[in-house]
Length: 261
Ligand SMILES: [Zn+2]
Image 1 (spheres, helix red, strand yellow):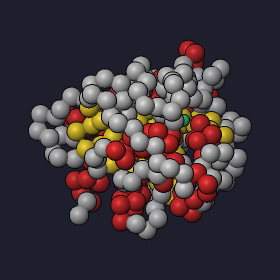
Image 2 (cartoon, protein in one colour; image 1 turned 180 degrees about the horizontal axis):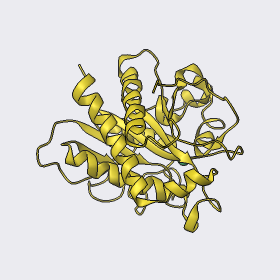
Image 3 (tube, helix red, strand yellow; image 1 turned 180 degrees about the vertical axis):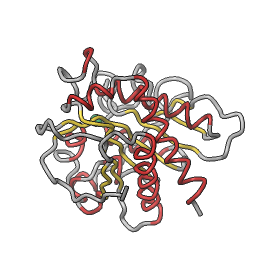
Image 4 (tube, helix red, strand yellow; image 1 turned 90 degrees about the horizontal axis):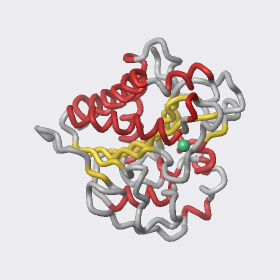
């Protein structure tokens, strides 16, 4: 299957991501003072360092489960069983962490959904600026933020992988990893709609903060559309979550073992 590089805004979609970008991520925001967040003790709350691999490969991946705490994200009334975006993102983030640990990676999850970051600007919401600031305060090789999409168009379906290729070497790696994520999803979930790949540097004013303000190679993954009945049913299914998480792990591993210089 050919990788599809799709122009932005093929049709109107609304998502958690849109909230994080369209209104907040203006040119003015790009220049505002950086937020400094001190990581808490590993193992609690923000910046949980997950169990160490038996044979660490020296590569650290930071996994950000989108939303959490008082911020449920999207999905209210459309995801089965009263689940919300934050439940899906946390489930997949934990599975991805386990999968990567098995492969030798060190993983850090940005939050556990229970203990709000102590220095967060808002009491119970760890917003995109705070997450980017947190990511930039630690050392890692790759950052991935996991989300669930929504759209007024209920036929919109499948996963979307976003990156920001500013032709800066570090940022470009995020795009290279993203390409491997797409290939792995296509291989492991062949019956699913083809994932779509977006380079947000083509539309910088609408780019996700977590793609363009994290100073490490980064991608943002929208797992599927809560507003599409097929996607919604899959996303709450444990076996599907396992396959999707494994696909992300396989894609990350493909980049770092086969393509990294
Ligand atoms: Zn989201």
